[in-house]
Structures are given as structure tokens and as C-alpha cells.
Image 1 (tube, rainbow, N blue to C red):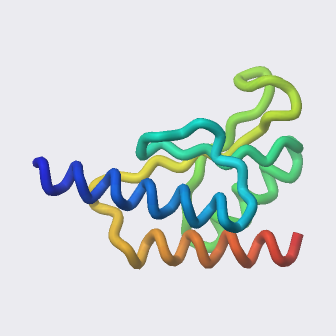
Image 2: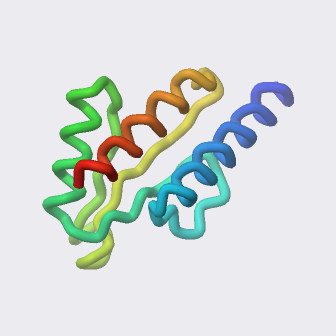
Length: 100
């Protein structure tokens, strides 16, 4: 599965880079598990709900799982995610950023 693994890491880097360019904090992630550290717990929950309404399932982590002020969305890419999936997610997160 070397091809799939290489593609997964390429996609993770592409997503992480896109998020960072838009100003999202992805912490120290270097793998296919990418946090989007929002900080505010309520804003994090609203983003998660909004993503779900738009067909994207994203886990939230908030206190006490993470320190207060570090609430986040956790994205976990897999080998089956394609460029179109990543593009859609980036598009949605850019839209969210623009309206919030």
C-alpha cells in the first residue's frame, strides 16, 4: 500500500497547507490527523455543526479533553479521500472564515 500511503501524506500536506494559508491554526500536525484549533468552545461547536450540515463529519475536542481555550476540530484523512473531497472541505472552511 505504498502508493496509497504516499497519496495520503500528500493530501494531508495539501490540506494542512491550505488551512494555514487561510489562517487556521493546525498546531504541530505532521500526519493525516489535522487539528483546526479554534480556541473558543462555542465557536468550535458551531463550526462542527455547520460542517455536518454541509456533509462533513468532523470531531470536536473541548475541555476537559483539551485545555480551556484550545477547543478544536479534528480532521482525519484516509486513503480513500480524493482531491475533490479535500477541495470541498477547503472551500467550506474558507466560506466559514469569511462569514465568521
